[in-house]
Image 1 (cartoon, rainbow, N blue to C red):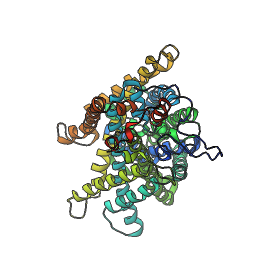
Image 2: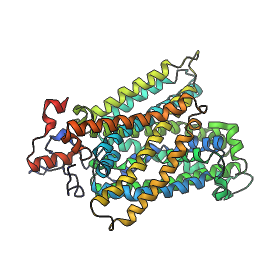
Image 3: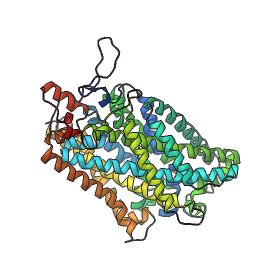
Image 4: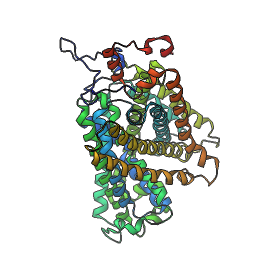
Length: 530
């Protein structure tokens, strides 16, 4: 594989013209690079946190964990997983200082474990983040339909707002990333404020046991549902690992990306641990599981109404929907950038590896994701065979299936990336200098592999399917199939198109190396472009 010492010296694809215009000029042309300097620390932090959809986690993931798994110690679970994610971030953040590539996960894995492994990871990443976004379209359609029926008396099928959401997300995804960051920032800020208000209300008016700390007792983590609860909690953290995807578009990738990851992990761990604890406080730790079973997905709103009134509850429901929208946009941007990176390196058609001249965004990658989303949502709509369209279908199937398949894929990527970080620095003789970070990466890999085993073992529970039924093995098989296809394609490239294989994970840096070495690029030939 081609190597370079320029990986930690900024984006090699950004060069200014003599006049100081700052326009991007790359060996392969301006359209082969994302626009640098578009987003700083605040914008990047807001973009990655928006993917976690705080209100969706508080009202959905937390309530489900209490209801289905019966884990009273959910707040402690967020603390424990916060430590695991921090350990993962130590090596992952250090890697981000050396590799700036919109392919993030697969680029890191390629640089550590080789191009074939990177190709496998690229297809897993594409499948995982796409599944997460598809699933969120389901709950978006369900919630918008509920709001329209309650407040306007309008009855529509869930797939109507879902498809409209696909179109609107597609338009926003083709615009400048800094504009997207502003949209995400506003929606996220409102969510955080609302959750903070209800947290204060729960603390001010606790249940019969007062401000009990029982949920932080390690004994509360016992029980058969622990493994499944771990998987649910990991899904709540998904988002922070997306920061390196935007490395090429930040002003100072060597520092901004790492800083954002640690800020995001800290925020998610503390914020979610506090919120899940206060939900238990509001009902009483001894009653939270039973109350969640009784109220179901409406638990948060049932607890909020008596304390803050109907108007606040309606407002909470409205911004629950906008938070879901922000999460959809965040995942859409990530998938579009993975498609762009893969197109630029020859893993997908070359046309996807170009950006729009006006916005510098991966417009074709955005369009591809929108088209596939339309097909997936349309397929679920066509197979909804209940007389008037079962409103629970998008939640019980599209949302549950997509969310858990995506979370499983992200766990696979995180565990593999931790191993790749170790290999990357050891191969460069930096094992002693990076010993602390490599130890953290090793511990993170072990912890994530443990969660992965639980996730595969209990996948039927995660998706609400019977043990041994088709969904319990077909759905996780989607990630396995993506990995096999990617690995197989990587081996074909290694045998038949070695220069393309050698570029996997290098991004625009590969083009700079080819220019410096005066090596003609095969990617300009008809065979490469096809």
